Amino acid sequence: MPTTARACQCRNFQGSTGVSLAISRAVETILPADVLAADPVARARALVPHIAAAAPRIEATRELPPELLAMLHEARMFRTLMPRAFGGEEISPQAYVQMMIHIASADASTAWCVGQASGCSMAAAYMEPEAAQAIWGAPNAALAWGTVGPDQIAQVVDGGYRVTGTWPFSVMAACA
Image (cartoon, rainbow, N blue to C red; front, side):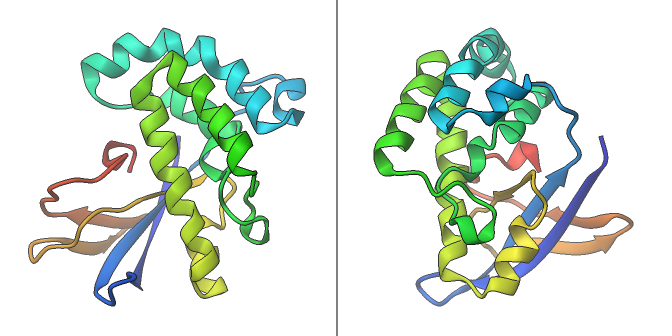
């Protein structure tokens, strides 16, 4: 699957500068059309058997398998809290909790990743529209971010950016 990435320099809420990396991967249609047309809670419920089947692999490898990641993107699980103005679902807190209960019942690590990426997507509401579009413009873009330190470098390479360095913590970094 081709991957593209864009780095954007952003200011966090404390005013320090950091780098956010938007990851966009091409995905093929995996889920049936009726599932994709359903509300996010029903989509999450439909994913439960797939998530549960991947749980041992997730535990062993400490990352979401590419095929499960593709399903989560296709079902728009990472965009449930993103404002509609930026291509998100902007679901209610009640629906979000119900959705997360289904995902967590199958695998807590998957729920953690969906929760973090969904939470990060809410930042679109507080950004300049151009920056939000640059990060989440592609329908299957997700955001990986973490703390910024002195040894982190983003280099332009063919097809995007190569980011190197060390991070004490970053959810979904392996998906980048």
